[in-house]
Length: 147
Image (tube, rainbow, N blue to C red; front, side, top):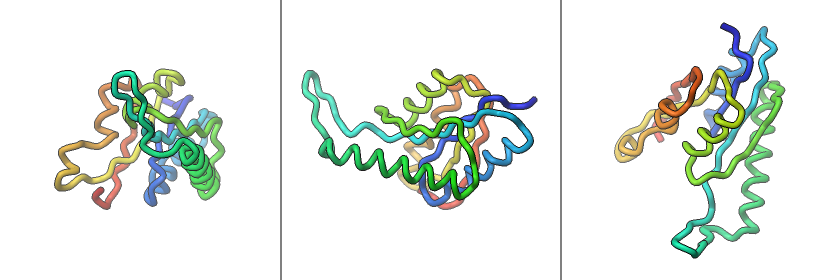
């Protein structure tokens, strides 16, 4: 089976290069569309009718702009041409990925999974969280260092 619509999900950490290189391998020799997604969690909390910013709104634009720049640098390092490179904000990383998948309907999602130790192992990994909710193949790239 040849994939036609591939989604690379990245958290933009140092080991994102490993995940990007695996996605590039999956695309070699194909005419598949590649979309790249980085999800940032919302910077506001809602409590009833009140909205409480966690960080000042002016800083949010800077953070999103910085994430877009890092995303472009990641693609440039790997000489990857993406049909779309998107920074999304969502209430949770899981929700952002699932909503984007519903919108673009990929046939393959490439995502990294960090080893979890200690209390972090109780929270689970985003890759594990999205598996039941996506309707396509998922390539989970095992990443070494614990988070």
